[in-house]
Structure formats: C-alpha cells, structure tokens
Amino acid sequence: MMGDPLVEKINRLRKERKAVILVHNYQLGEVQDIGDFVGDSLELSQKAAKTEAEVIVFCGVHFMAETASITCPNKRVLLPDIHAGCPMANMIDAEKLRKKKAEHPGAMVVCYVNSTAEVKAESDICCTSANAVKIVASIPKDREIIFVPDQYLGDYAAKKAGRKVIPWPGYCPTHARIRPEHITRLRVEYPRAKVVVHPECRPEVIALADEVGSTSGIIRYAARPEVQEMIVGTELGIIHRLRKENPGKKFIPITEQAVCPNMKLITLEKVLWALEEMAPEVKVPEAIRVRAQAAVDRMLEASK
Image (cartoon, rainbow, N blue to C red):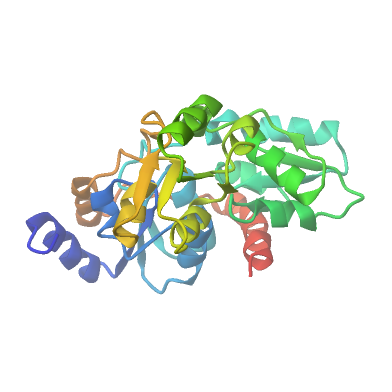
C-alpha cells in the first residue's frame, strides 16, 4: 500500500496526532494493513492499557473503544464509525443484569468483553474468548456463576472448566449463522483440511471441530507446520491475516454468511476523517468507568 495517497495522509496524521491505530482481526483487509497492532479483544485491551500514544484510533466496534476508554481514561479514543456496534452487546443492559443478580444473590458475574461499559460495571470480572475458560475456572467453587451475554461462549467455558454457569440468552448473529451442515459438506470437499471454529459458535458446531479457539488461537493454530488446509469457522475478516501470514496454505471460509456488517463499517477514508477531525470520540462516564475498570483489571491480571 506504499504510495497510496490515502495511506500517506493517515501515516502523516498518525504521527502528528501521536496516535496509535489498533485493529481487530475482523476488520477489512486494507484497514488491517495500516494498523500499528492487529489482534483480538484481549490483545487489543492489553495494548490499549500499555500504549504511550496520546490518541487511540480503535478500528473495531463500540464496546472495544469503550474498553480502551476504560483502561486509558487520559487518552482520546476515536471510533472511526460511531455506528459500528455489536448486536450481542445490545442483548443485555445494566438494568436487566441487576435483575438477574437479584435472582441469584451471592453469584459472581463473568462478563464477556463483548458488552457495554455499564454492563461491565455491574460485573465482577470480564473475560474474552481467549481466556473465558481460565476465568470461569478461577471463580470460587462455592459461588454461582452468571455468564453474560454470550450463551454459547458461556456453555463452552463451563464445560471446559468443569463448572456450571447461569447463561444469559445472548449470542453473536454472525457465529450463529455457522451450522453443522457447513462442516459436514466441507469435510467431504476438503478431506485433509482441519476445522477450527470460534467458541461463540453453537455447541453442535463446536462438537464437530478439530480445534476451538479465539481469533488469536486460530491464528496460532494456522501457523502450525502440519496444518496446510484449514476450514475457518469465524468471521471472514480473519482470512486476510491468515493468508498474509501463511503464504502457500489454503484457508476455506466455513460459510460466506459469516460476515459481521458492523465490523465492515470502518474504511480507510473513515480512519483518515477520524484523525483529521479527532472524532467520533468514545468516552465512558467516570462513575461507570471506575467500576468497569475493576472488572477489566481483574481480567488483565488473570491473563498474565
């Protein structure tokens, strides 16, 4: 992309604004290519917490920018398209969670980071798809566990950790589109391919996979020398990075329907406009931020 006037403008403004561009693995390929760092939710949360930049341009969805605002209250956090939301995060709010907590006094709330700041503020500890099993396993055995908002990740983490959880009936619409028949059909067509799926998938999909992993886990699995063909069971944006980092290997989308339209809202033009206008800015109110920070900090501490 060297020589692209748009990219050159972004690079110039990135330096002038003392900004860092963080990009999620599901973003458009051209956006991934300009990122200072590309990763999954946990990696980006950790990067946001450690960066010395004054401005964070978060190429992801709204809850991710909120998490950066939570961990970096003194930095300016920009989300290039303020409409880039998360349907699953919208399936629960603070009032609904408080009601569920009242039904289970004494329970601890494990909150997937795919949630709003106000829901994080009502939770005991956050988790990502990369560390959900570890977080669930860390909860004292004498405590009930309410897991919000992803019922499928909660089910997966509970089974792997040998615990029971009280799941919230939320889900990721993109991963819910992945069906067992997609795997069955592709295994016939690509008999040597490994099937790797995200833990946000339905249990019946997970049961058919060779490996289950977060986006970072999928990327690590793809790098194994014995893996030459892989059926990719997550949002299709990750395939750009997989092909870029593993030339010569074959990556097959599990279904062309596994696309998150919200992740695709951010473009190079919008990144440039965000840097030019220093907007849209995402800022979590301090009263909510402090409480949400505690849940995020416990996650980051448990992930070391």
